[in-house]
Image 1 (tube, rainbow, N blue to C red):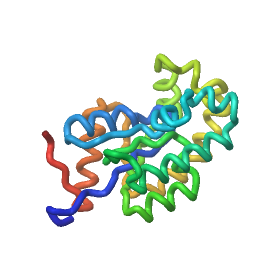
Image 2 (cartoon, rainbow, N blue to C red):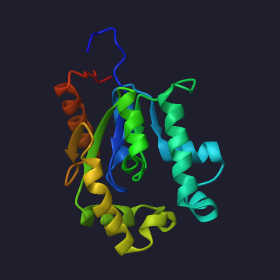
Image 3 (cartoon, one colour):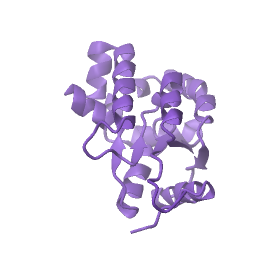
Image 4 (cartoon, rainbow, N blue to C red):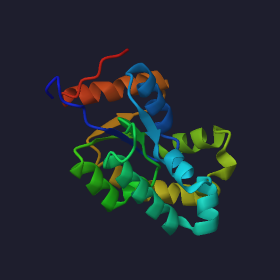
Length: 186
């Protein structure tokens, strides 16, 4: 990458509980990058929570909102477009979303962990009771098994087991560096 070029947008992908939002926020703070959590952007646009969207409009409507919002982010249709985006767990499972990310020249980093670890992390979250796909463990496990092979389409994979968020974030930066996408810490 030439020094005067803008680095590509980095998308953090993976299953719920992988640490996408936490790693994204850490990267934004320490590398002076703008960060967006796609689920939070959807909530702002729709004026309701993800749980409310699932409950009142269904998953099909939510996935449509997700793709529309991703399209806006990628088209730079925001006043200060993000440079790091945490995708919801199902966003990278949709072929249309993956295609848009690739066509935009963005980079996807898969934050990975075993299903048992992800389940434990999700159950410890304060908002665990409102996560639609966490209410039934067998559904959680089935979704994980369905989506995991799709996450491997990402440009890079970072194992997040047994490490603090800071270490996961620095590993993301190391992976980007291998592709000549260089970030300087602030």
